Image 1: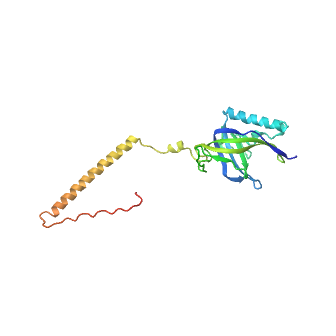
Image 2: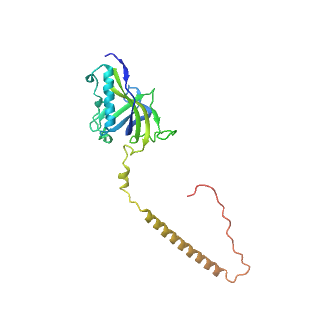
Image 3: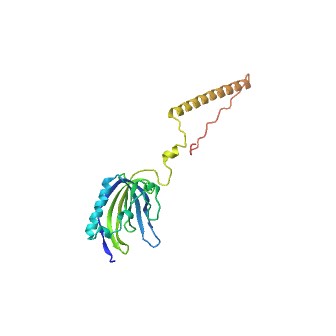
Length: 240
């Protein structure tokens, strides 16, 4: 098969979707002899008709531009765009992908994606672009004709952090909280009040005891000068 120049579609946005398997800061190779790429998978709700229609429309435009028929291309729904409820190409179902369509986007090591924070002039970090967070992305479909055949792929242009979500692979916060008991704020206030009352009572008792003892020890003594406590010396440091 002759290798033809890639044909690129239009850039389009996919907003507020969860991201899976991000490789955005360090490119990785999928196979031993393959080139390193930046990549991520986007989880698109099966009810997101707007995004699904855009993907379908872009696919049809690209195929028409290539002069080929849809039958001459690998099924996009079995490669870079697949049903998360079905096994992937190695026969596994990723639990976090259930109920979604999974769009896998990538770009070459030479052309890394633009990474943005939702806040203007804020630098985004790996602690924010993790598997499970929500992102806004810019991608583009493109056609590849090579020794691998005619394929529709997805080019990753930009990823913007949108908001936090439960990190994939970790137990959801709601499930963890079920193992613990929590006190109301009013209960905590009552506890502190009782503690302070007891402390004051103990302090008064100790003060009275010390006063009485000193009176008995030095009653009738002459020329007695009590030892005055020295002025405390304060040192700066951590307060525990």
